[in-house]
Image 1 (cartoon, rainbow, N blue to C red):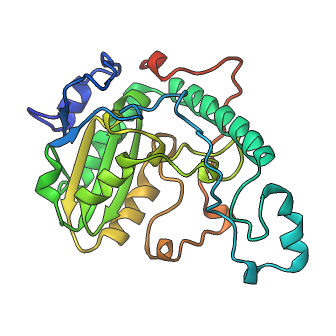
Image 2 (tube, rainbow, N blue to C red):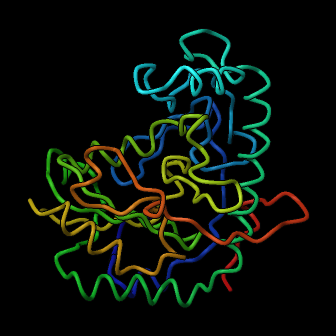
Length: 270
Protein backbone atom coordinates (compact mmCIF):
# COMPACT_ATOMS: atom_id res chain seq x y z
CA UNK A 1 0.00 0.00 0.00
CA UNK A 2 1.18 3.58 -0.49
CA UNK A 3 3.27 5.15 2.22
CA UNK A 4 6.73 4.77 3.72
CA UNK A 5 9.86 3.90 1.75
CA UNK A 6 9.29 2.98 -1.88
CA UNK A 7 12.52 1.88 -3.52
CA UNK A 8 13.39 -1.50 -5.08
CA UNK A 9 13.98 -2.96 -1.62
CA UNK A 10 10.49 -1.95 -0.62
CA UNK A 11 9.07 -3.77 -3.65
CA UNK A 12 10.93 -6.92 -2.62
CA UNK A 13 9.47 -6.77 0.87
CA UNK A 14 5.90 -6.37 -0.37
CA UNK A 15 3.61 -9.41 0.04
CA UNK A 16 2.23 -11.00 -3.10
CA UNK A 17 -1.16 -11.62 -1.58
CA UNK A 18 -2.88 -8.96 0.49
CA UNK A 19 -5.93 -9.43 2.67
CA UNK A 20 -8.83 -8.48 0.42
CA UNK A 21 -11.61 -6.54 2.12
CA UNK A 22 -14.44 -5.92 -0.36
CA UNK A 23 -15.93 -2.45 -0.46
CA UNK A 24 -19.68 -2.26 0.03
CA UNK A 25 -22.01 0.72 0.07
CA UNK A 26 -21.50 0.88 3.84
CA UNK A 27 -17.71 0.80 3.60
CA UNK A 28 -16.12 4.18 4.41
CA UNK A 29 -14.18 5.74 1.52
CA UNK A 30 -10.47 4.94 1.51
CA UNK A 31 -7.40 6.58 0.05
CA UNK A 32 -5.26 4.90 -2.60
CA UNK A 33 -2.28 6.86 -3.91
CA UNK A 34 -4.02 9.94 -2.55
CA UNK A 35 -7.24 9.31 -4.48
CA UNK A 36 -10.54 8.65 -2.70
CA UNK A 37 -12.11 5.28 -3.55
CA UNK A 38 -15.80 5.06 -2.79
CA UNK A 39 -18.07 2.06 -2.98
CA UNK A 40 -19.67 1.64 -6.40
CA UNK A 41 -21.36 -0.99 -8.52
CA UNK A 42 -17.92 -2.30 -9.50
CA UNK A 43 -15.29 -3.72 -7.17
CA UNK A 44 -11.98 -1.95 -6.77
CA UNK A 45 -10.16 -5.17 -7.69
CA UNK A 46 -10.43 -7.29 -10.82
CA UNK A 47 -12.89 -10.17 -10.41
CA UNK A 48 -14.10 -12.78 -12.85
CA UNK A 49 -17.75 -12.06 -11.98
CA UNK A 50 -17.38 -8.49 -13.18
CA UNK A 51 -15.31 -9.32 -16.25
CA UNK A 52 -16.76 -9.42 -19.77
CA UNK A 53 -20.01 -7.68 -18.86
CA UNK A 54 -21.98 -7.39 -22.09
CA UNK A 55 -22.15 -3.99 -23.78
CA UNK A 56 -23.82 -4.18 -27.19
CA UNK A 57 -22.31 -0.93 -28.49
CA UNK A 58 -19.75 -1.62 -31.20
CA UNK A 59 -16.42 0.19 -30.87
CA UNK A 60 -14.15 -1.74 -33.22
CA UNK A 61 -15.85 -1.83 -36.61
CA UNK A 62 -14.32 0.20 -39.48
CA UNK A 63 -16.39 3.02 -41.02
CA UNK A 64 -18.71 1.97 -43.85
CA UNK A 65 -16.71 3.93 -46.42
CA UNK A 66 -13.61 1.81 -45.70
CA UNK A 67 -15.39 -1.46 -46.53
CA UNK A 68 -16.53 -3.05 -49.75
CA UNK A 69 -20.15 -4.18 -50.01
CA UNK A 70 -19.00 -7.78 -49.68
CA UNK A 71 -16.97 -7.06 -46.54
CA UNK A 72 -19.86 -5.15 -44.98
CA UNK A 73 -22.29 -8.00 -45.66
CA UNK A 74 -19.88 -10.63 -44.34
CA UNK A 75 -19.92 -8.99 -40.90
CA UNK A 76 -23.62 -8.17 -40.91
CA UNK A 77 -24.57 -11.25 -38.83
CA UNK A 78 -22.83 -9.70 -35.79
CA UNK A 79 -24.93 -6.52 -35.81
CA UNK A 80 -28.56 -5.70 -35.11
CA UNK A 81 -28.68 -2.63 -37.33
CA UNK A 82 -27.64 -1.59 -40.83
CA UNK A 83 -25.08 0.88 -39.44
CA UNK A 84 -23.24 -1.90 -37.55
CA UNK A 85 -23.55 0.09 -34.32
CA UNK A 86 -25.12 -2.54 -32.04
CA UNK A 87 -23.98 -6.11 -31.59
CA UNK A 88 -26.34 -9.07 -31.75
CA UNK A 89 -27.10 -11.34 -28.82
CA UNK A 90 -25.46 -14.20 -30.72
CA UNK A 91 -22.20 -12.31 -31.14
CA UNK A 92 -22.22 -11.11 -27.52
CA UNK A 93 -22.70 -14.65 -26.19
CA UNK A 94 -19.85 -15.99 -28.33
CA UNK A 95 -17.54 -13.11 -27.47
CA UNK A 96 -18.26 -13.31 -23.73
CA UNK A 97 -17.47 -17.02 -23.68
CA UNK A 98 -14.19 -16.40 -25.49
CA UNK A 99 -13.29 -13.46 -23.23
CA UNK A 100 -13.86 -15.50 -20.06
CA UNK A 101 -11.76 -18.33 -21.46
CA UNK A 102 -9.00 -15.82 -22.20
CA UNK A 103 -9.36 -14.45 -18.65
CA UNK A 104 -8.82 -17.92 -17.20
CA UNK A 105 -5.84 -18.53 -19.46
CA UNK A 106 -4.24 -15.27 -18.35
CA UNK A 107 -4.78 -16.11 -14.68
CA UNK A 108 -3.09 -19.48 -15.20
CA UNK A 109 -0.24 -17.68 -16.97
CA UNK A 110 0.23 -15.28 -14.04
CA UNK A 111 0.34 -18.14 -11.53
CA UNK A 112 3.24 -19.89 -13.24
CA UNK A 113 5.44 -16.79 -13.37
CA UNK A 114 8.45 -16.47 -11.07
CA UNK A 115 8.05 -13.84 -8.38
CA UNK A 116 11.82 -13.64 -8.01
CA UNK A 117 12.31 -12.98 -11.71
CA UNK A 118 9.62 -10.30 -11.66
CA UNK A 119 11.30 -8.51 -8.76
CA UNK A 120 14.62 -8.64 -10.59
CA UNK A 121 13.02 -7.20 -13.74
CA UNK A 122 11.51 -4.33 -11.74
CA UNK A 123 14.78 -3.66 -9.93
CA UNK A 124 16.57 -3.63 -13.29
CA UNK A 125 14.29 -1.03 -14.89
CA UNK A 126 14.51 1.21 -11.81
CA UNK A 127 18.29 0.93 -11.73
CA UNK A 128 18.55 1.83 -15.42
CA UNK A 129 16.04 4.68 -15.27
CA UNK A 130 16.98 6.46 -12.05
CA UNK A 131 14.69 9.37 -12.84
CA UNK A 132 11.70 7.09 -12.14
CA UNK A 133 10.66 7.88 -8.59
CA UNK A 134 8.07 6.19 -6.37
CA UNK A 135 4.74 7.97 -6.49
CA UNK A 136 2.61 7.89 -3.34
CA UNK A 137 0.16 10.67 -4.16
CA UNK A 138 -1.13 11.14 -7.71
CA UNK A 139 -1.78 14.81 -7.00
CA UNK A 140 1.98 15.37 -7.20
CA UNK A 141 1.76 14.57 -10.94
CA UNK A 142 -1.45 16.47 -11.66
CA UNK A 143 -1.00 18.04 -15.11
CA UNK A 144 2.55 16.69 -15.35
CA UNK A 145 3.76 15.24 -18.66
CA UNK A 146 5.98 12.20 -18.48
CA UNK A 147 6.39 8.45 -18.14
CA UNK A 148 4.87 6.11 -15.54
CA UNK A 149 5.11 2.47 -14.50
CA UNK A 150 2.16 0.79 -12.77
CA UNK A 151 3.09 -2.32 -10.76
CA UNK A 152 0.57 -5.08 -10.00
CA UNK A 153 2.44 -7.26 -7.51
CA UNK A 154 -0.22 -9.93 -7.06
CA UNK A 155 -0.16 -10.69 -10.78
CA UNK A 156 3.59 -10.18 -11.25
CA UNK A 157 2.84 -7.66 -13.98
CA UNK A 158 3.72 -4.07 -14.84
CA UNK A 159 2.45 -1.53 -17.34
CA UNK A 160 4.55 1.24 -18.91
CA UNK A 161 2.81 4.32 -20.20
CA UNK A 162 3.32 7.97 -21.12
CA UNK A 163 0.90 10.84 -20.81
CA UNK A 164 0.59 14.61 -20.96
CA UNK A 165 -1.16 14.41 -17.57
CA UNK A 166 0.03 11.40 -15.57
CA UNK A 167 -2.54 11.73 -12.79
CA UNK A 168 -5.48 11.95 -15.19
CA UNK A 169 -4.19 9.05 -17.31
CA UNK A 170 -3.77 6.66 -14.38
CA UNK A 171 -7.20 7.57 -13.04
CA UNK A 172 -8.66 6.72 -16.46
CA UNK A 173 -7.02 3.28 -16.24
CA UNK A 174 -8.92 2.77 -12.98
CA UNK A 175 -12.20 4.48 -13.76
CA UNK A 176 -14.08 2.05 -15.94
CA UNK A 177 -14.13 -1.32 -17.59
CA UNK A 178 -12.56 -2.24 -20.91
CA UNK A 179 -15.01 -1.95 -23.78
CA UNK A 180 -16.66 -5.36 -24.24
CA UNK A 181 -15.70 -5.88 -27.89
CA UNK A 182 -12.07 -4.88 -27.17
CA UNK A 183 -11.38 -7.43 -24.43
CA UNK A 184 -9.66 -9.80 -26.85
CA UNK A 185 -6.80 -8.30 -28.83
CA UNK A 186 -5.73 -11.03 -31.23
CA UNK A 187 -7.05 -14.50 -30.31
CA UNK A 188 -8.50 -15.88 -27.10
CA UNK A 189 -5.48 -18.16 -26.76
CA UNK A 190 -2.91 -15.38 -27.02
CA UNK A 191 -4.52 -12.06 -26.04
CA UNK A 192 -2.88 -10.12 -23.20
CA UNK A 193 -5.29 -8.94 -20.51
CA UNK A 194 -5.71 -5.17 -20.83
CA UNK A 195 -4.42 -2.86 -18.09
CA UNK A 196 -7.84 -1.17 -18.25
CA UNK A 197 -9.49 -4.39 -17.09
CA UNK A 198 -7.70 -4.15 -13.74
CA UNK A 199 -9.00 -1.96 -10.95
CA UNK A 200 -7.46 0.65 -8.66
CA UNK A 201 -6.49 -1.65 -5.79
CA UNK A 202 -4.73 -4.04 -8.19
CA UNK A 203 -2.06 -1.34 -8.60
CA UNK A 204 0.34 -1.75 -5.68
CA UNK A 205 3.20 0.55 -6.76
CA UNK A 206 3.59 3.44 -9.19
CA UNK A 207 6.83 4.99 -10.44
CA UNK A 208 6.88 8.15 -12.54
CA UNK A 209 9.20 10.70 -14.08
CA UNK A 210 8.63 14.12 -15.61
CA UNK A 211 9.84 14.26 -19.22
CA UNK A 212 8.87 15.67 -22.60
CA UNK A 213 10.41 12.60 -24.30
CA UNK A 214 7.76 10.21 -23.01
CA UNK A 215 6.96 8.59 -26.37
CA UNK A 216 10.57 7.68 -27.08
CA UNK A 217 11.25 6.55 -23.51
CA UNK A 218 8.07 4.46 -23.41
CA UNK A 219 9.03 2.64 -26.60
CA UNK A 220 12.54 1.84 -25.38
CA UNK A 221 11.36 0.69 -21.96
CA UNK A 222 8.64 -1.56 -23.40
CA UNK A 223 11.16 -3.21 -25.73
CA UNK A 224 13.66 -3.77 -22.90
CA UNK A 225 11.27 -5.11 -20.25
CA UNK A 226 10.73 -8.91 -20.16
CA UNK A 227 7.46 -9.38 -22.09
CA UNK A 228 6.07 -12.06 -19.78
CA UNK A 229 5.87 -9.45 -17.00
CA UNK A 230 4.36 -6.63 -19.09
CA UNK A 231 0.69 -5.84 -19.74
CA UNK A 232 1.36 -3.52 -22.70
CA UNK A 233 -0.50 -4.92 -25.68
CA UNK A 234 1.37 -2.90 -28.31
CA UNK A 235 4.73 -1.12 -28.55
CA UNK A 236 4.90 2.52 -27.59
CA UNK A 237 6.22 5.41 -29.62
CA UNK A 238 4.93 7.88 -32.18
CA UNK A 239 3.14 5.30 -34.33
CA UNK A 240 0.62 4.74 -31.54
CA UNK A 241 -0.89 8.15 -32.19
CA UNK A 242 -2.56 6.85 -35.32
CA UNK A 243 -4.03 3.89 -33.44
CA UNK A 244 -2.99 1.63 -36.32
CA UNK A 245 -0.96 -1.50 -35.56
CA UNK A 246 0.48 -4.05 -37.91
CA UNK A 247 -0.44 -7.66 -37.06
CA UNK A 248 3.11 -8.52 -35.98
CA UNK A 249 3.20 -5.51 -33.63
CA UNK A 250 0.43 -6.90 -31.43
CA UNK A 251 1.88 -8.58 -28.37
CA UNK A 252 0.78 -12.21 -27.97
CA UNK A 253 1.31 -14.77 -25.23
CA UNK A 254 1.51 -18.53 -25.29
CA UNK A 255 -1.27 -19.06 -22.79
CA UNK A 256 -1.60 -22.43 -21.10
CA UNK A 257 -4.87 -24.40 -21.27
CA UNK A 258 -6.74 -24.62 -17.98
CA UNK A 259 -9.19 -27.23 -16.72
CA UNK A 260 -11.05 -25.04 -14.26
CA UNK A 261 -11.88 -21.40 -13.58
CA UNK A 262 -9.01 -19.26 -12.35
CA UNK A 263 -9.50 -17.13 -9.27
CA UNK A 264 -7.21 -14.11 -8.75
CA UNK A 265 -7.42 -14.66 -4.97
CA UNK A 266 -5.49 -17.91 -5.46
CA UNK A 267 -2.50 -16.17 -7.01
CA UNK A 268 0.72 -16.77 -5.11
CA UNK A 269 4.41 -16.28 -5.75
CA UNK A 270 6.49 -19.04 -7.25
